[in-house]
Image (cartoon, rainbow, N blue to C red; front, side):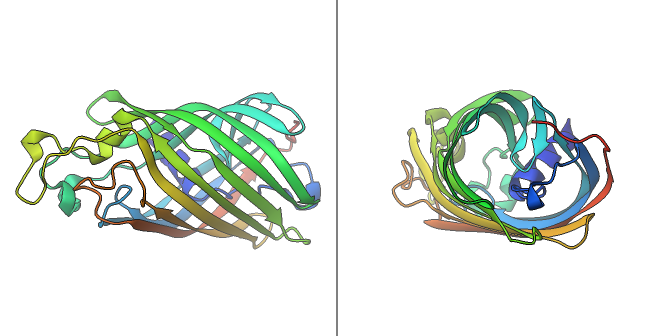
Length: 276
C-alpha cells in the first residue's frame, strides 16, 4: 500500500506521465509499466516557509480500463463517461512533513501522509482544435491521514479549469490549470490550528476556520524522446491571500511555488488496446 500511495503522489505531481491527448489519436495500450525518476521541490505544507525537496526512482503503472484507471489523472474508477461529461472516483496523495524539519511547527505533531478520495465531475467546456480542449474539474474528496494509524482529517473541494493541448507531431503535450482549494474546518485545523499545549511566545494559540485554503495556477509540459522514453516537468504557483486562516501563526508566506522534472521509461506494454 505504501508503494501504491507513493506512485499516486508522483502521478499527481507530474500529471502528464501519460499523454493527455494521444498523438494522432492513436489507440493506446491497455497498460504500460516502467520506471519513473525525478525530483520535486514543494512547500512543506500550504503557507510554509520551509520546503521539501524529494528525489525518487520507482516503478509506475498506467492502466486504462473502462472502469478502473491509473493514468495522468490519478488512480480511480470511472463511473460515467459521456461525450462531454465524465464522473469518476479518484485517489490523490501527498507525502508527509516532519515537524523537526519545519521551524514553524517545532514541537507540534508531524504531518502524515494524506490520502484524498472521492468523486470528481469532469465537464468538457470547449475544444478549440482537434489537438486541444478545455474542461472543468469538480472534485470533492475526503482527506485521510496515515500516521500511527488511519484517521479522517476532513474534506476538500478543488474546482479548476484545465487546458490541454499537443503539438502537431504529437511529441509535445502541454497542460495549464487554474483553480482554488476550499477545505472544511477539520482539514484547516489540521494545517493551521495551534492548540494551547503547543502555543509559545512566538507561536500563539489559534483556532482555525473552514474556508478558502489557496488559489493555484499551474503548468506542465512533456516531450516524447522515443516510443519508450518521455521527459516532463511542472511548475505550480499558489497564493494564500484571502485564505480563511491567513492570520494563523503557521501561515508564514503569502505565496508558494512548486516545481519538478522527471523522466518515464516504459519497459513493457500490453498488445491489447484500451477501449473506451
